[in-house]
Image 1 (cartoon, rainbow, N blue to C red):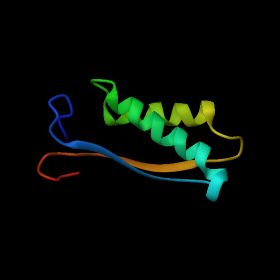
Image 2: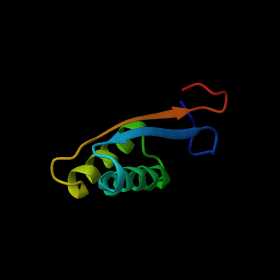
Image 3: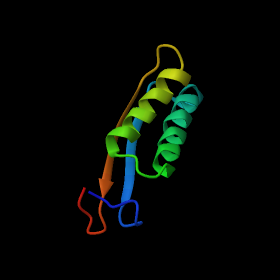
Length: 80
């Protein structure tokens, strides 16, 4: 697992949201912003980052829309 407290490695996310075009932008923005915000909080585990993203989608997401994401740590050797 990446040691993000020392800057070694990276935390990455790949995601997809319901909708296409402009209708998907608000939810995609929430997904990305909540991921970035959680990653900047020191000491959060990967599970805690996922929970923070899920919580943001539940609070701010559009009614009836959903998102799917894969979140992982990649260490400085490239292991995920």
